[in-house]
Each structure stands twice: as C-alpha cells, then as structure tokens.
Image 1: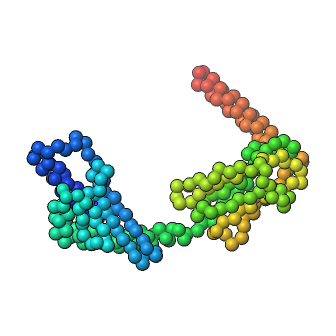
Image 2: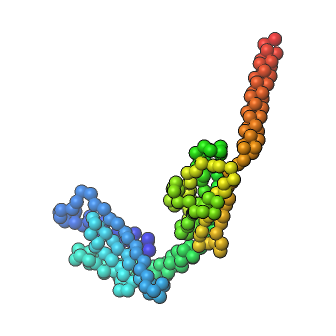
Image 3: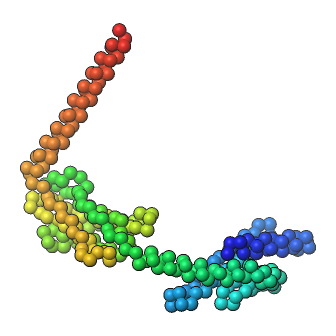
Length: 251
C-alpha cells in the first residue's frame, strides 16, 4: 500500500505546484498524512480496509475496500482519484490490503491467546532482623497476559494492611512484571506466603518466607563478619605486596 500512496502524494504535490503556477494562494507550510485502518466484523468474517489521505487535517482522498476504488472528498482532488482508479496495478494493491488486515488480525489473535507463566521470588528489602520493621517483596515477572493477582498471607491468614504494589510494568517483550510489598516486623516462627494467581497457571504459585531464628541470624552475621574481615586482610596483604614490589623496583 505504501507505493500506492507514494504515487498519490507525488500527484498531490503536482497539484500544489500547478496551483502555484496559476497564481492561486497556497500555504507556506502544509502537512500531508497517510492513515491506514483495518475494520473487523465478527472476527475476520467481514474485513474492511480504509486508506485516508489527509491534507492540513482535512481528509481529501479515501480508498474504501467496501467501495473498491479511490474517492475524492473535495472537488479539487477528483482528477487524482480518477487517475488512481485508471491504474489497474494501484487498484489491485489497494484492494490487496484486506488480506494484510486479515493476516494482522490472525497475528494479534495468536498473541492474545498466548500465555506465559510468571516467575516468583520473595525476599526482604534489607537483612531480616527479628523485632525490627522490614518489608517483604514478592517479585513476579515474565508473565502474559497482565491479569494477575498477588496476595500476602501470614501464618495462613491473608494480610491486607501494609500491602503496596507497583502495578503492572512492561518488560518490553510483551511480558510484564509487578512488585507487591508487605510492611512487616519479623518474629520467630512467623511464616509469610506470597500467593500468585494467573490465567496461565492451573494452580496458584506459592512462595514461602520464614522469619529466621536468633541462632540463624547469629550464624549469618558471623558469616558476614568473617567475609568482611577476610576482605580487609586481603586488602592489607595486597597493599603490602604492592609496596614491597615498588621498593624492589626502586633499588
């Protein structure tokens, strides 16, 4: 269809040039637009293509597949419509756009029926310390379509207070992601559950997070402390080694 409208645009420019040659007033600046529309009735049982040529926000020429030919909407452009209708190849290309609309509908329909299961991860926003305010994050990503429900439970009871959500975020590849946060104060023995329901799933996805015990926290903190000390000793050793190499080069 692009080559058809390219011909139309070239002809409209010729008309404008003829107006200038005839001394008629023409705007210093003008804008031409091409607009293609696909209309569907009862799926693809009835497909209609409409191509519009717009000059300075006014539609001047139209091709309607239900009509089967170009139609000028103002008297000035009637010669162009008649010329386009006399070009067999141009008419065939315009009429063939119905098939393009039908193919696009099938493509879109296949995407609308496509379903991708979500991936769910639960983690605290900061190191979980008992009896201190924290925030649990349920990160759900890679799902399609966007009809998703994310719920929080504490020891089997649904939590609605302190729940916040980012809303749907596009991943840029037809899939979505969402973060649903729960304000909480972890206590030993508490079990938090993020439950995700989506049209792609036969059963809900359930991810459990348990508040760590005091001993688990001590082990984690001692492990972190050991890691920090190890990095410090590594840095000191590296500095001494580099200093010794520098002294050797000076000698």
